[in-house]
Image (cartoon, rainbow, N blue to C red; front, side):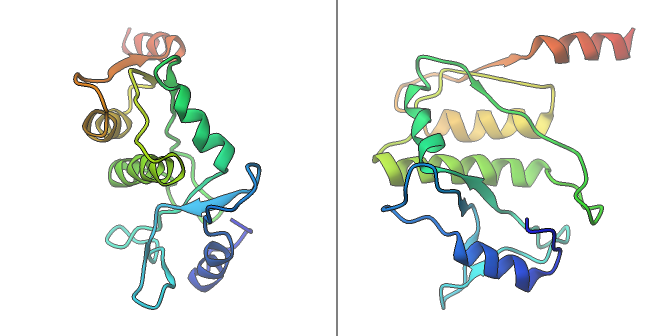
Length: 161
């Protein structure tokens, strides 16, 4: 995010790119973080105990979740490191990121997305986030069916055999 790892720079960038209901569909916005009492973003310090969590999307991409019952939601976690060597995703942040995305969808459309199928990899954090968040926010009863992507099935078999 703007090639900086300074918290103050990140707070300024996140503050400048907050979501508003009058945004153009193609405008990127940030979400997923708490705010201090004065309205300043509380994005964390980047440590294990105070993780930095910032989601980025556009109103158009969030609105596309309205087709969730007709299509498979594809998600993927990444364990790449950023330029400072910090991991970019983990178990706790997977849940927060997905919950924040669903909450933002509700803010835009007035209801939570209704996910029937989700395809991802064999990552436990991602699986737990989908099952805990998507299943509890559903409008209809029943669990989300979690499908593993064929590439990841083949990759996991090759690693084990």
